[in-house]
Length: 260
Ligand SMILES: [Zn+2]
Ligand SMILES: [Zn+2]
Image (tube, rainbow, N blue to C red; front, side):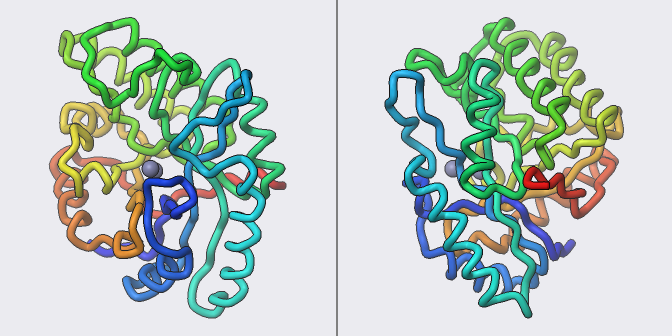
């Protein structure tokens, strides 16, 4: 399997990725990518003024977009670049976060739900194991609201939720994400950062349900290093999942532009 698109790319600005923006672009071109999206973690300032730590700092968000626009010009004969963010759906702060990223120059967004409870200091990461069915329900509710908001091009790692409780509850709740995805036509992403780092996602139990529901499925490299801006090795595992569960793989997702 090959791909000529990838809309999940980070930059060093989030503090846990490395390499220059230009190195990511060169690596993508070398791999054969024709459509590339930058989607670094969206800035998030808490009501008390402190900033969430794993994101583009709010004061650097405009510069992020400006720098990428310059690079887009420079490489326009080789690759199409769109500029956006990976953002959570936090019910209390959604409108504010959306305004922040639009003001910064976002053209598109992908959803990446890394926390619940609006990321209040006591909230735990979605990737932290939990058998709490309420947490599972909260997670599913955030994802569905995000799908229905109509601003997200796709849902990154929908299967990031690390639920160790009852399998029946998991299947029942997670199926709701697949049903909403199908109904709204918003794709779910097989995430390559999970593949590379042997994380709990991609989660076969989830993709089995996605196959049954035939919701649209795409892929994302989730590059945190320039060398990951093309990831041929992980493509093989994505291909296995697509075949094994007869997924409705749509390839390149339809981009939802938030600046028009
Ligand atoms: Zn990241
Ligand atoms: Zn990401």
